[in-house]
Amino acid sequence: MTALAAPVLAADAITDAGTSQLVLAAVLGIAIVVLLIAWAKWHPFLALIIGAGALGIIAGAAPGDTIDSFTAGVGTTVGNVGLLIALGSMIGALLAESGGADGIVNTIVRKFTGNALPWAMAGVAALIGLPLFFEVGVVLLVPIVLLVAQRTRGSLLKIGIPALAGLSVLHGLVPPHPGPLVAVSSLNADLGLTLAFGLICAIPTVIIAGPVFGTFIAKRVDVPAPARVATSAAAEPDNPDAERDAGGRDARRIPSFWAAVLTVLVPIVLMLLRAIAELTMDEGTRVRTVFEVLGEPVVALLFGLLLAMWTLGKRAGFDRAQTSSVIGGSLPPIAGILLIVAAGGGFKQVLVDAGVGTVVADAAKDANISALLLGFLVAVGIRVATGSATVATITAAGIVAPLAGTLEKPEVALLALAIGCGSLFFSHVNDAGFWLVKEYFGMTVGQTIKTWSVMETIISVVGFACVMLLDVFV
Image (tube, rainbow, N blue to C red; front, top):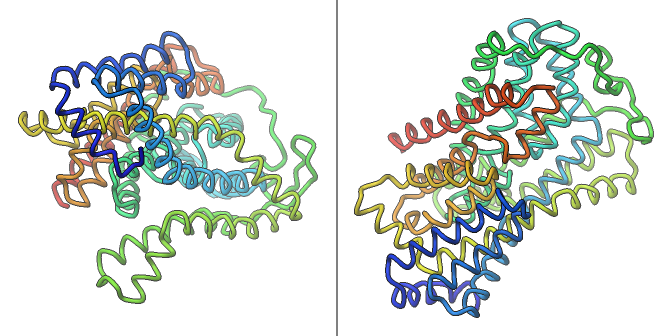
């Protein structure tokens, strides 16, 4: 079965299965995924495959149709999202390996001190978080955070929480991160509008969850800075232009601050210009066509990657073989993410084709529940149960996808962001990010819940409040 045949399966499923059977199928399918991830400790990729199969069979669909639907969903998701994740990962790898990320951090840290430092850390984390996955951003930033806290003898949480907030907000709300991209693809949302609205919501969310909450919680939870921090020469704020030799690599020049910043921003700016052109220019005009092509996500990220190969790779002293090695080396670490996203796309397609989304959409209309609120709450439930923001985004987007067809283009973009906000709610012990932060900062489980978990919840709630506020005006 192809993707074009999906609506036929959905119609057949609604005819052959009653509403109660479809709801039961959805509940049991999601429950199986949750139990396999949270209790049995299965990899989400396998859990989503098993859950999708169970959902289709319980819904009354033929096994062959379920398999075809799942396969079509996997192919569509990889085609729409996988390429963008790969390109974004390549840019992030060049930013990290060239020392460009270190250069951005060091420049800003040198220029801000005292009470301004937490704000600077939030800003730099958000900036380098644009092309980097959350875990990569943490690995890059935490040594800087620890070193700055040690040298300033300030509170580790007052500096660290803003940095974590900047990374987490961008990870959940702004493409080209996997979660927002999956939501955009599943809902057929406009990427430019989603990016624009995501950046608007990211600013107040980072401020409240970062410097404001960081200053508040630092007075109540005492996490001392380490006595001594081992770091590379490139990570030294007092030695920003030094060459480094980390992991046995050759010493190299660090790209300039502005070269790194502009490289990170170019794909974002191109996608934003496309959204502006589509809103302000007549369709078919030459200028709008140019912006539409350049702002196409694949084109924008590819252009950003080609630029990064020169501004980051060449400027850092990489030869062609080294640049190719860095780019190629960025792909194996994201294999797991791509598989989860792909399997999630298949699970979503089975949800849609079985008719579950239509049942939920009809129920939401009858109950007069906002599509934004429904998407947020479903994502919250899956996030708390599984610990995976990506699984929460995929599942919620699949359930509310039929509602997207009844909304205007700006509201669909906001729906994608509402789901993204819900996917960040209350990270706890079933989330790998929880343990990553705990170990890096040397906190107890209780301290991590009071700091990191609460910060994630603030991001989720404040971000969703901003989405609802934007919905009033758009």
